[in-house]
Length: 178
Image (cartoon, rainbow, N blue to C red; front, side, top):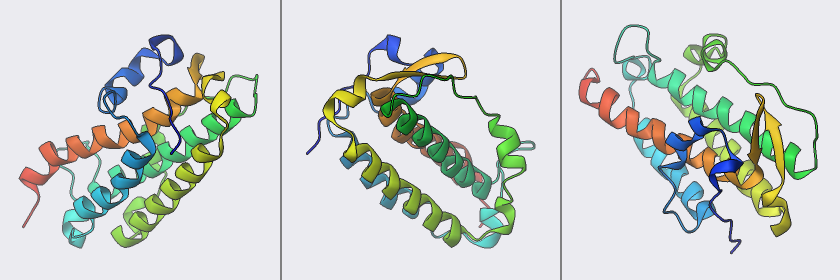
């Protein structure tokens, strides 16, 4: 079992705090991240086509778009972790999550396809993070002009999913069409 320490506050931008709050007491972030595969499948897997295209309010993402956002964000953040682990010195670009969702084409995909994409991405996360040497987690890089460490990203990815699963459970599930 690989032990990855929870990041210090100077290792991530303050807006990561929301996501990291969901995982600050997690002692094995890789086991937590692996368990999220089944949790995400459980939450999204039984949606009907109508429910998958449902957004809880005007201007909010549909369930498919939310899942697509999780997939895209995980890929981007994992790229950042890999870049910093390998010693990248260039500041990496930020991204506009709303533009990514608007251009993601998630409405054309099935929930089953999106869930497969999520699981494959999460398996890549698990394999990649597990492959890093212990010294690598303290490596710092810059993205969107903010310093962040590899270990902060390792925690942020599952924390981001936990945040959005909580949003889904409190805002989507109570009003899903039956």
